[in-house]
Image 1 (cartoon, one colour):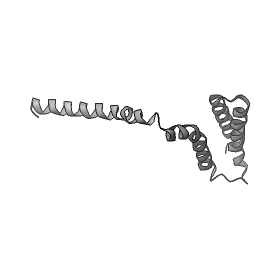
Image 2: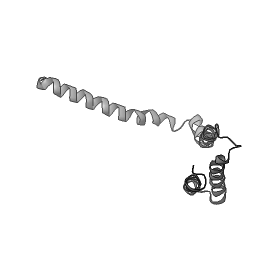
Image 3: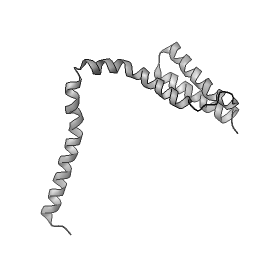
Image 4: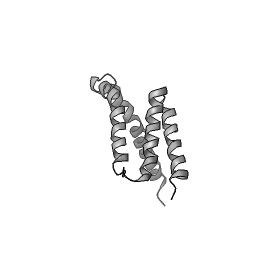
Amino acid sequence: MPDTRYAVAAVLVSAAVTWALRALPFAALTPLRTSATVQYLSTRMPAGVMLILLAYCLRDLPLTHVGALAPSAALGTTVGLHLWRRNALLSILGGTAVHVVLTSTVFSR
């Protein structure tokens, strides 16, 4: 069993590293808040990320297969709800609900 001084030193070093790792993001964000590049990216990236996720999720979807109707209907529902109400939560929940209902009832194997 290690002596008491060694255990206390190990706990103190662990605490210091943990505190530093938790404080580092806040220290790094301070100069970025006034950056014009970060402000530009914050307005443009959400749509770009959504387009990348959409392309990634639909890349292997066989459009000639009848099972492709569930994701397509869910996507249409999500887009339609978002254009209609401009509420991200409503559109995500609505699209997810349509997909779950269609895949578990209509297109179940």
